Length: 269
Image (cartoon, rainbow, N blue to C red; front, side, top):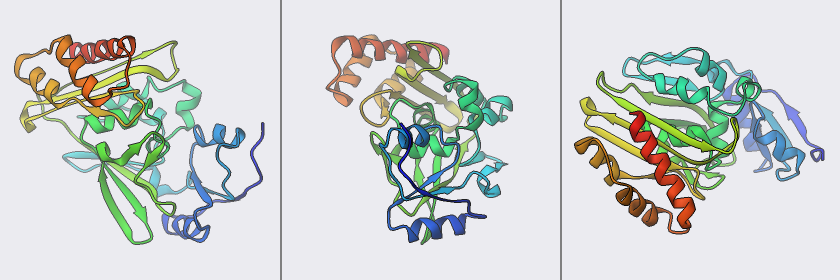
């Protein structure tokens, strides 16, 4: 199939992009790499009257070292993070090289992944575990939203029709921090059936563990994270009970798969 007809514009800066989105009255979509929106257009699951191409806006392509954190522009591609590990945030490179296929990573963007909000995507899960903060630009200015609150449901976020993701601020873990990330895929490059991400940062007194690839946003397993921080491990029964509370619709096989993903993320750390 081919997309329904639409108009196209390439703004020079964020202000121009926001003006175009605001003027379209909810019938415009921003596009950068197009790795998620492109197929939706072709299948006519999305039918915007206007595409606003933000991929050439320089301020959205920057990676900045802010001392205690890295600020990653919304249009930074997966491949950029894969090819150059950011000191203190090496997990980002580890995750990036496991996103889909290299052709997708060359064009797909971090901001696009967050805005698309696929529950099985890598970045919503990992950035929630890393306690990242998403900066959103809109007509009233910029606002910040914690990554673990940015996605509100499957394919749904806090973004208004006239807002875009501007950047993501990822705190640098302390010197003794450990992390783990594991996902089950039917074949390399496909979306996972189960996934989990863990951060243990004694210096910041932080233990964050999230389960992903559910029918909802990534879910925090706080009790399990505390147990791992204190005892170095958590039982399968504890993980299964936590998942049963957070995702009660999981069948026995699906729950076991996710328990195993969590266990392997813990082992990686």
